[in-house]
Image (cartoon, rainbow, N blue to C red; front, side):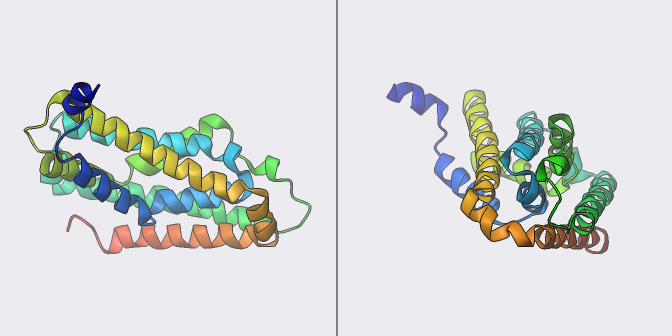
Length: 215
């Protein structure tokens, strides 16, 4: 068993796991999307968003393992992705802000505001794929921290670990928001939380346009 773990776990795995976990602690577009939907849709209305976010991260991990670095060496491609991401975040922000304004009354049923699973999955996938920082982040992790000396099996192990951790972290956040105690605290503040999440997504979208990460 120890031999199998030695073959699967790269020597740099502790450093990679730490850097990846610290990145999860830093709130970004995915965090605010999960919060914005979980506050009304709870776990059942958010779990496929979490799955979509994890799949989007997995796609960039796979591209990094495959040696795809065009995004790093093509400022035009990177800028196009930033602008597409900004437009997508702005659209999601508008949806949350409209929901907050439209559903501020006490008679609104949460179940009526939940996205169906397919739309949840696409929303999460779009959030992850249209964030070019994810591409650069995973490319850095897989090339700088893991390094070329890691075997393919070790790269796969690291990729699976990070993908599962992204899903569990986001789903755990949605589960905490779904707890009866949390819902009791948030019951009168659901439109406010949706509105704040929408406002943050607007600011993130504007920052992508005004302060390009790749510039």
